[in-house]
Image (cartoon, rainbow, N blue to C red):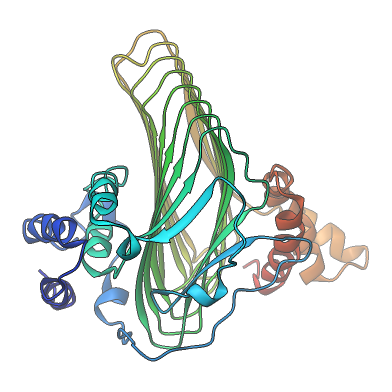
Length: 419
């Protein structure tokens, strides 16, 4: 066990609040969990030296941090600053049928109901999910009533000051026939360490439009997960956009717990320098007639490293499942590294499933051709790379978010050299 994990456990043992039962359970599991090494399959290509050496410390000092503005986006802002939910940035005028509250403000009976739900969608195998159980100070509970369509997006922003360690947790419940858009957004000022986990319960015939932006760079450590449980005829459309940092690790779990559930996941990440980005995506088809479409694309430059592990598990009762996983990667440097592992595990005989992964390099002849036509090298790189990613940006349902992220991706391409 590492010194960092020992300190985290010691801090968790001193807390006594409404989350104590979950915290105790997580502490018991952590006591039996070995710190990952190169021999640990889930962390084989992602060393945790950045976590162990992180100078980040928990802070009780108030900080005035605001989420970045997005043109033409009017969202309900849920803002965490250094791990604490900032109630001053939450509007008092919530749409009818939408409830947002901290667990500590619930009655004892309501807290008991919440304890029965939180940490049940996030699998226990996630080490830092357990650490988040231990160190998060509260859980923000978001609930949409039956049949209610919330047209205004909810944006969950996790903001960290220089050198601060923070741990945030949100649980989102969509009742039957409801609709909601949720945007997860993480930003840090440097030398920070963040764990941010969100669980989504998507009831029958409900629809979730989901985004996760992991755009922090530099010497930050960001570890988190988005976890979804879909019941009968539930639908979700998720988009992930990520840049690299000292260590960025995201775990996504999609559980088809009901019949005719439908899930779409599009992910894209762009890495430069010595950055590391690790995406682990697991889809569990437990019931029949489910569909999953998963598209993941990465562009890796300089000495950066990407890790993708995509697993689709078809259970024996999940007949007539349709599932497809596609991972495409573009390598811009001979010194960069791409580790990709798509997996299909099938125990049903009436299914249609496919998976694949490719790694290619930029066409240097095309790059040279554009340069001979008067196009600068930097602009030529943007032109050749942008189409690779832009296809997934075009699939984003929210036009305001698509137009917000496009210039950031173009700027990112300008910084990424082809070697």
